[in-house]
Amino acid sequence: MAHEEKKLKLYSYWRSSCSCRIRIALNLKGLEYQYIPVNLFKGEQFSPEFQKLNPIGYVPVLVDGDIVISDSFAIFMYLEEKYPQRSLLPSDLQKKALNFQAANIVCSSIQPLQNLAVLKYIEEKVSPDEKIPWAKRHIEKGFDALEKLLKDHAGRYATGDEVFMADLFLAPQLHAGIKRFNVDMAKFPLLSRLNEAYSELPHFQNAMPENQPDAPSA
Image 1 (cartoon, rainbow, N blue to C red):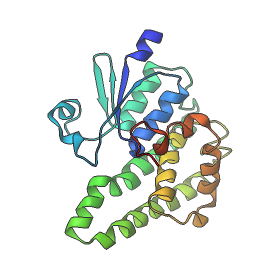
Image 2: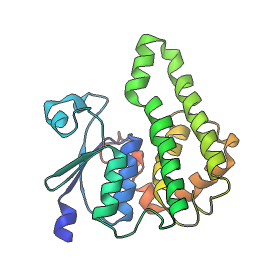
Image 3: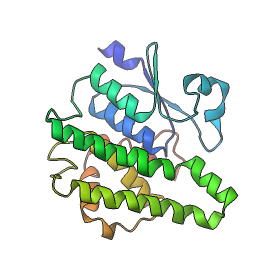
Image 4: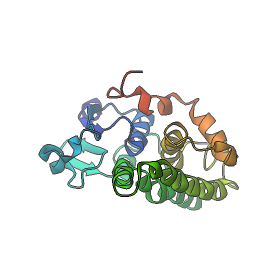
């Protein structure tokens, strides 16, 4: 198992919330991996070498021996089946579906609308002044939906008292909403409480942007 774990490679960018999801998953499963930084700001995702790994040019990309997987949702599901230690999906079917719902709100209805490429396009084609309001509008819309979705299901964490998939997708998005986009979390008491709970988990905090090897020094 040790040999298998060491061959894992994660192509990541320090501020990428999609990459952060997978960093948390790898930490929780106790899997060692080689961190390979891809500087999205400098356009390294468009290099021929990286395009061979992921033609659409996004991080994260996981390499496990001869297997190459891109997209955080696909990587998560792969890790869950290939490395079943510390399961990150509940066995209860309804709770599993709830985790899929919450994760999909983040990865389909929030993050794509505030990623680097979209914000750059808005800055260039609309106005630099519209970039942050655009991001905040879509983040807050998603947060409002998550607050309503989880209110009758949350325990210590998003879907109960154990950490599952939804938490791995929520934590990086909450971090980005607060740190990058100054979202007023007073409107989202449940999500604020979850964010506090995640701040107490070393496996989560070690995966946060500021703790990555390619993060700019303070």
